[in-house]
Length: 243
Image (tube, rainbow, N blue to C red):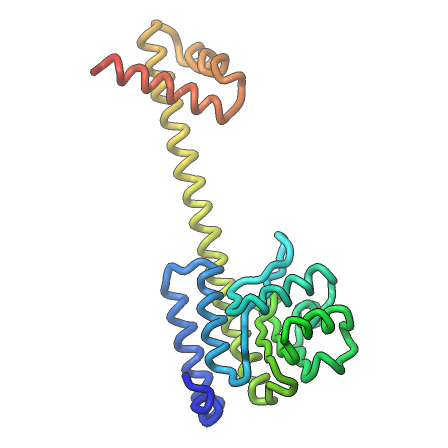
């Protein structure tokens, strides 16, 4: 979408384009990182004056950037985490839009503002990613010039962040479910190979199930991981004997 086209669209029509493209991501198999990469690119296209966009994710794993469209965005974010100050962190903490028209005159985060200015950045708008009662992070755009963003741009970012938060929550839940499913399959496979190994030992040595399991445990040293390895070795040995 061309910047001049974005300016001319009424807000509702402009957002319908953004939301339609974000909604398409909900039906895809994207990870959080790749989905936010697409969101970052979409926001940079939609907001005139943006030289970079991306998201800051804040959760139990820490603070990190995702979907940055420009190296300066990623570095400016890293500086916020290092210095523990800046507009994205403030947007997450206050769950409110944060707008900086000129980093050379804004006094809220002096250390970060000076460092960001050295990167060639002069303005920023950051909107919180909030899903339900959870603040997931912030969506932001950076500008190379002072006063790069209008109230209209801020409104677009705010409403886009609300949609992006739902996307992040959805994809995160899907990733967790996939990991849980993978863990379950691995657990079932491990249980099955141990059962087969016990049967091999029972038939080979004419022993009971408990004795066979004890033999596997003794080979593994009692460790769950090496128990599976010991069981796999017994099964593989039985297969080789049949060849």
